[in-house]
Every structure is written in structure tokens, then in C-alpha cells.
Amino acid sequence: MAVEARIRELGSRHQSLDQAIQDELRRPYADDIRLKELKRQKLRLKEEMEALRGQMH
Image 1 (cartoon, rainbow, N blue to C red):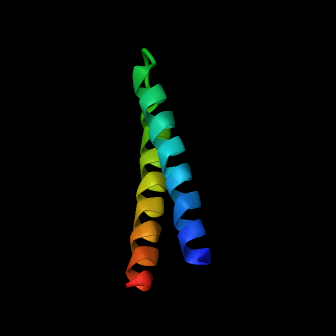
Image 2 (image 1 turned 30 degrees about the horizontal axis):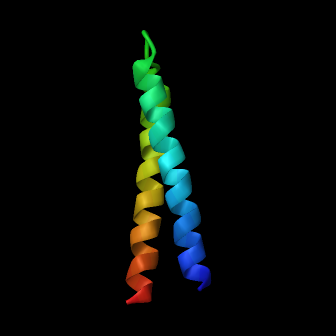
Image 3 (image 1 turned 180 degrees about the vertical axis):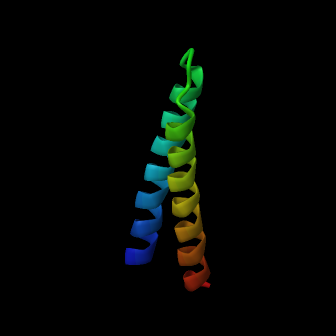
């Protein structure tokens, strides 16, 4: 059960990062460095969620 809770928490953070990326892209002069870091963080979360899902099966 703890793994499922961790996946939900990571999913929530993943969505928050996605929103932050979208917000940054809407700015007239998006910060490329910030976008790269947000995308890197989002990818790390996705990879961690996939690894945890793999442990469940």
C-alpha cells in the first residue's frame, strides 16, 4: 500500500511540474534554463513512478 501512495504522490508532483512547464511556455520570454530543469525533474518523477509500478507486478 505504501508503494501505491508514493506513486500517487509522485503523480501529483508530476502534474504540478507539467503545469509549471505550461505556465512558463505561456510567458512572452520563456526561460529556457528553467524549462529544461522542470522537464528534467518531470522525467525523473516519471521514471521513478515506472520503477515503482514495476515492483508491484
